[in-house]
Length: 274
Image (cartoon, rainbow, N blue to C red; front, side):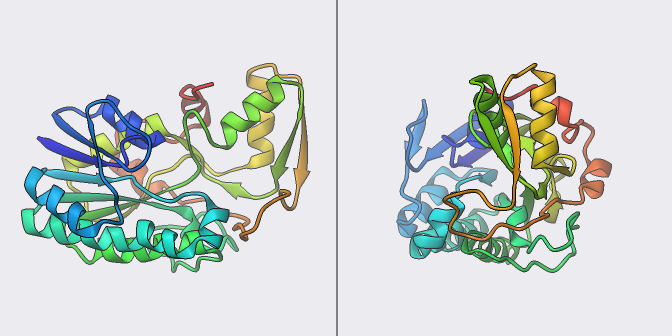
């Protein structure tokens, strides 16, 4: 099986490269990856041409502009990468009849309720969430596609890694009061590897268990015997975009589909790269 990973230099892309079996074609947009191809995702004709020439059986689009505040300021770029590029990936996928897995986010929801399931109505409160929702819409216009919604992916960066490193240095962690469903890039990659076999379509939530950032910070502090302190805050200094208070995802459907433990916090924390 020939699998194309778009965004191969990101956290999920790196883990997919390690986990997936078969002929792996790696595309990166910024940081170089070994044995990969550099491709500007906003050069849409080049993207379509590349996909059609390589003719992968499966395409996994992990590429995204994920800096929430940067998306709020650089909206045109966020739209091009998170939405418009997906339209052209879909166009090429349709031509070669490839199975497309598109990675999306819990930030398509407003965070008023939490534990959102696959059928809940999105209502993003920042431009990152809106651009990702538009990308979902393009992906779902293709019958042979699966949108994987996830939350708080971490590996060598992300909130858990920030907490670990800050507390280890004896400093204070600012913990936003809200809730989410963090998952390690490794466990998400393993889940996607299994999902390829089933060729599921539409939307599936694949994320960790619901937890507050405060409780997560406390868990990391206790688990690794760290000395720093934790401060609960309503807003992190420097934030530009609004954040949903509780963007946690209902993962009950994925638990029935997948055979692996992709969700437990202890299992996910094993794969922090610190």
